[in-house]
Each structure stands twice: as structure tokens, then as C-alpha cells.
Length: 246
Image (cartoon, rainbow, N blue to C red):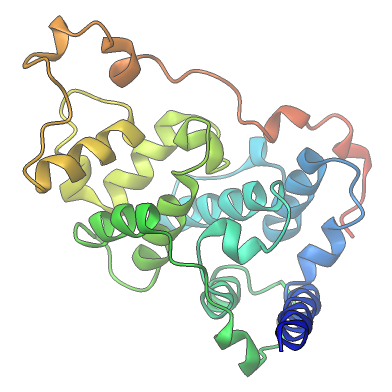
């Protein structure tokens, strides 16, 4: 019985991997890249037709496409299922690609609707916090709430693990799609830290023992600069300028 269950689970995992490779054509194209950074760069370019440094984010719609492409590109770095690493179901990822990246060849498969992300309690708390403060219409707010929450449990600055170019892009994302929540961060606290502090306050808990932040010995933990370079964009553009989009 145990062997049969293990074989079944292995078959399901294999089928999911095969379906994703067929369903998300950019994944198949990225699979041969030598490094995680290269896979991320190629994914972004296949989705948008350009490099991140060339992204046009002047309009709200172009900014949304840039954000979604960046998150998916960052997710390809971690290995495994892109949907899981990005925080969405296979069905939602399919709908997202079809709506925002129609140039990607998509063939829907009803079996994908059964591929759901494992419900992590920590991720769910952040996702629900974001969902409660949505400020835009349509499905994108729900997708971004799930994606931001999933990437928030990674180890780097949140903007880095979202694949964004700097913290300002993350602030713009949150102010656009989750404005009521973003407006509460009046002291410009680090966003990940702000999420957890808000969750504690909503539950009536006290996260800090110091009543005033300026008197805290760990002030920089909450308010320190979030400078740096995106962990996958550091691969640069020089090499890729010579490479065709497959």
C-alpha cells in the first residue's frame, strides 16, 4: 500500500512537471540556461521581449506587466514548480499568462486546475492581510497578494525576492494595489517587517518592547536602508545582448 501510494505521488509529480513544461512554454526555453540568474533573465525577456533594465513602467498597465514578469523570473531561480515558487495555482498562472502575456503560447489543460499550492500558514496570513486592503479591480490584486505573500518568506529583502529592480518599485506596487495598507506605513518601515508588525497589532499583540522606535537598539532592523542589486538582475545584460530570444 505504501509503495503504491509512493508510486502514485511520483506519477502525479511527473505528470505535473510535464504539463508545466508543455503549458508554460517559457519554462522549456529556460531549462537549458546554465545558471539560475540566466534562467531568470531569459524568462523575463521571453515574457516581455526586453531586458529588465529596458522596462517601460510609465503607465499602470506596463508597470503591472513588469512586476508580474519580474516575480515569475525570480521564481524560476529557485527550481521546482514555478507556480509554487510564485505562490499561485497552475490555473491562476495560466490565466495570468493568458491575460498579461498573450504572446506566450498557452494551451489550457483542465487537469492544471487540480495543481494547488501547499497552504503555508505564514503565507496565508500575509496574503489575507493584503487581500483585505485591495485597491484595484480585477484578478490581479488577488494574484499579487498571493505572490507577494509567498515571496515574503524568502530570505532576502522583499523587493529582491520579487525580482524588482529596487525598493521604490515595491512601494509603488503596494501603493497601487494595496493602498489602504501601504498608507499605514507612515514611517517607511521595511515592508516585510511592516507586514508582520501589522499582523501582530491586528491580533492585539505587541511586537516590540520599546514604546518608541527611535529608542530601540534594533532601529535599523526595521528602518534601515534596503539598498542592493536584484539577486538575478546582477547577471547583467552584456552577455544577453548577443543572445537571440528562443
